[in-house]
Every structure is written in C-alpha cells, then in structure tokens.
Image (cartoon, rainbow, N blue to C red; front, side, top):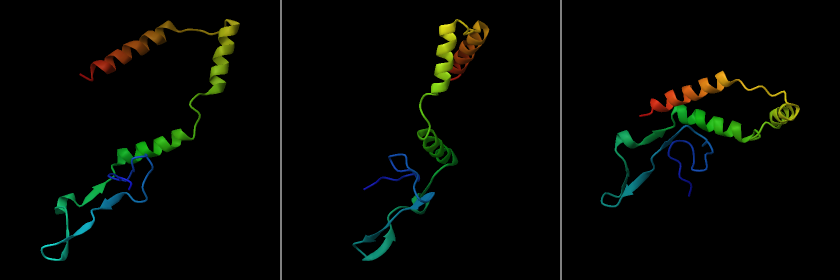
Amino acid sequence: MAVNLTGIDLSGTAAGSTHKTASSTANPSTNTTQDAAPEHQKEVRITSTASLLSHLQRSLATRPAVDQSRVDSISNALANGTYKIDSNKIASGLIDSERALGKLK
C-alpha cells in the first residue's frame, strides 16, 4: 500500500489530485459509517512549495547531471593555458557563502 500524505507518494511521484480526504470507517457500536478523524483533520493538501519541488524534481530527472560541453570547454582552456581565474569573483563568492551560513544560526 502506498503512503500518500501530501499529494506526493513516498517515491516522489505526484499524485493524481492535490488533496486526499480521510476514509470513513464503520463504528461497531452503532453500526453506522462515521468519519474517523475530527473535521479539521479530514483533508491534507499539498502546499504550493511541495508542488513546485515535485515539478522541479521531475524536470531535473530528465536532464543530465553533467553539462559535458561545458566540461570539455573548461578542459580545453586548461590544456591550452587560456583558462582565466578571477580571484575577486572567487573571494566574493566565499564571503557571500559565509554570510549566508552565518544567518542560519
């Protein structure tokens, strides 16, 4: 049985609808069908962020992990001695990364 809590099953595949309603269960004492969960717990909705992440995951799964043409271009530039390194750009990137990590605390 697949578990589907937010419209995405555990494998990451998007479900057919954006929400699921809790199943009704029979109450043995009254022999009638009643909802098993309180009214506020009947429905689980997929958030727009989860939907976007699911779409992004499917989109990225169709693309190669490595851009081989870019790798070849950089390899050729290194072999020819024409690859330029911008130390200011590298330093700025490192500083930006440190600032971003500092905000996580």
